Amino acid sequence: MPIDGTTKLYGIIGHPVGHSMSPAMHNAAFAATGINGVYVAMDVEDAGRAVTALRELGFVGVSVTVPHKEAVMAHVDEIDPVARRIGAVNTLLFYRHPDDGQVVVRGFNTDWQGANLALAEKIRLAGSRVLVLGAGGAARAVGFGLVEAGARVVISNRTEARGKDLAESLGCRFTAPDRLHEVEADVLVNTTPVGMVPHADGLPIDPDLLPRFSLVMDIVYAPLETRLLREAAAAGCQVIDGLAMLQYQGAVQFKIWTGVRPPVDVMRRALLEQLAAH
Ligand code: ATR
Image (cartoon, rainbow, N blue to C red; front, side, top):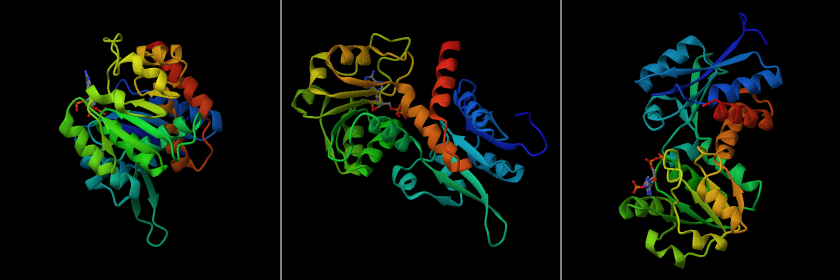
């Protein structure tokens, strides 16, 4: 659809943001659904000033990425309750208040929903036992999502204090990396960068433990088939690659912004094309 005087504005703020695959994913979704919108990458250093500008310019929906996911929370009018509990916002919706017509900015976190939707394609999350490796921002979103869905979560992390902090805020157990053989879980989720290029031979867990899991998800997507996923598949596990969470968190954003059912296959194809082009 050509850009014209009524084209709606969407985008992503981050720093840096030039390598984001979200513009390709969302613009492909607009094209597939016939929505007159355009989604651009905006490299900004100050999240607060950016929100003021976006509000003034009439943006409808904006993604928020590193390093602004926490800082942006102080600059929005409303925050979705789960995003508040996670302590990070990755999605902004700008809408006019029905009473006074003022623009209201509402913050959401779709990362946890992205992880849950990806996992829910393969497994019933309620009652599942899930081992999460890592305790950074991604682990926090994934962990809160799993607890929200009724899964039983165990956190493991290289730095014990950080792992224990996250486990405590999730109300779940922590297990040190050298005691992972003691954990009984159905699902393994890697949220660490171990296995990412240029260290693609890295493995975040002893491969001898992999046959214990029925499902393994990696959030690393470069390479798409990480060593973890390759070894997990060889051990008989189902696997979910790192594009799935990205694709589904974007799909939830698209639904929040447009109210239209997201074309998830189109969005995944756009991400795959971006990966191939890099
Ligand atoms: P993000 O916000 O993307 O999750 P992050 O906050 O930097 O990124 O967190 C990265 C996670 O991967 C952390 O849990 C980190 O462990 P530490 O808390 O010990 O730093 C983990 N991680 C990073 N590199 C790792 C490595 N080589 N081995 C094991 N864990 C690693």
